[in-house]
Length: 142
Image (cartoon, rainbow, N blue to C red):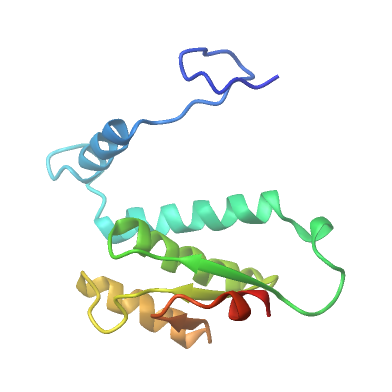
């Protein structure tokens, strides 16, 4: 039995990083005088790949209809780094060949960082639909 209690550390428990710990991990990984010297886009690529891999693991082919049609997936991307992770995850989900992601990205005309423009361009190159207005209930049901 898995525990949601992060204080309980046994082989069967799941542990989580707090927001503060995750921020510190990013700082440590990107420290120019540290052991790793990752750049932000590298971490974003790894995070997006991890998210898309977790989705694939949780919702593999055995849970989807057995046909040649890709399942739609709505990816909600905010303006910050989590949004960048979402753009990367959408690209990987598309390339896995099982999902047809649609990305909700409200800052389409004005991405927060320059490399977000590259992520958007990559999504468009793989024919991933990007929308800036949240879809209606009718659009979500089709």
